[in-house]
Amino acid sequence: MIVLGIETTCDETAAAVVERLEDGRGKILSNIVLSQVKQHAEFGGVVPEIAARAHVEALDLIIAQAMAEAVLNYSSLDGIAAAAGPGLVGGVIVGLTTAKAIALVQQKPLIAVNHLEAHALTARLTDATPFPYCLFLASGGHTQIVAVRGIGDYVRIGTTQDDAIGEAFDKTAKLLGLGYPGGPLVEKEAARGDAARFALPRPMHGRKEADFSLSGLKTALRLEAEKIAPLSDQDVADLCASFQQAVVDVVLDRLRAGVRIFRAKYGAPTAVVAAGGVAANQAIRRVLHRLAFEVGASLVVPPLDLCTDNGAMIAWAGCERLALGLTDTLDVAPRARWPLDEIAAAKGKLQRTAAYK
Ligand code: KG4
Ligand code: ZN
Image (cartoon, rainbow, N blue to C red; front, side, top):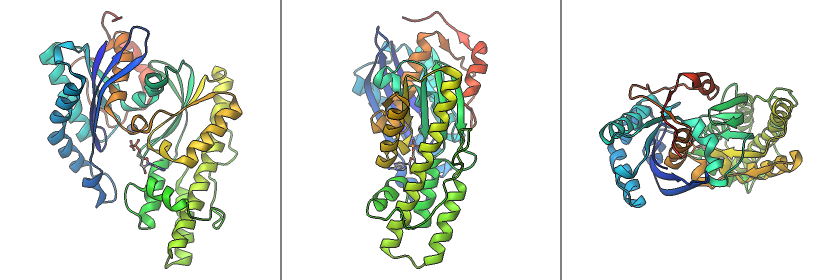
């Protein structure tokens, strides 16, 4: 089974072709990602109108490139998948409408994929991870701990009450004048800083439920920075190191709580799985290793280009759904908001086609 996947929910215009082999394993035939980071950098964050326009301009070419690299024509495809949300709705409309047009013209099934579901299932594309596993999704827009129990069966165990972790990194970078996107820049500064210099809070520490809160940490950092302004290079590095250490401690504590809840409800997870751009952070990766070891699960961190937004994860989620005969009609609507656990609730309403092999 071969599926084209289209991703346009944020600031990456992406298309990929993925094959699902007979044994259920995945094979990426092409994976083209065009980042709009440069277009948004001067604004210090993603500007929705600029993003939507850039998707319109680039998408056709990116799809053509993905098809060419896979050495396939449209008639060889078994389905067309696009991220139908959650995300910036202007961009989602561009990707989903394009997918509908291809599906209609080529008379192929359409699969409207939830972007978070695609992140959640990437570990099965890269590592054939069996269900149930514990997903830690941390990006610029999302911070969630999710029990992934099956296709379309996701239970959110924890989420952030305010900022996403990536967003907290981005805001910290902005505050310290480092640029955008902030995560890699803060990590670089942190490497030469003293993590013990500033006593920053560890929000939600020790709580039984597995939710996150990052905004207090961000405020505490700002107050420390204001106290010692103007900042020297060393001050900036020390602030970054103290901030990153606080985030790392929070991630360990919140994931411990998350896995405890997971175990109590669903038994031991087969794996702890990371997804989202924040998984690029080495200090966070180290703490994920520690956690997985502690709970006796394996750790799956997909290669970085599959952790961040990409078309292959959409195509793969499309394959997984199509293999179960889960497809969508051409009137499916784009969604700015689409929580993962709503997918299970909608299951019965999905159009079912004959199951593919
Ligand atoms: O998954 P992603 O590429 O896009 C979405 O937000 O959907 O994640 C981007 C986020 C940004 O907030 C970025 O600052 C953060 O991931 N990030 C990092 C690192 N690299 C990227 N955060 C911390 N450390 C990093 N090395
Ligand atoms: Zn994402």
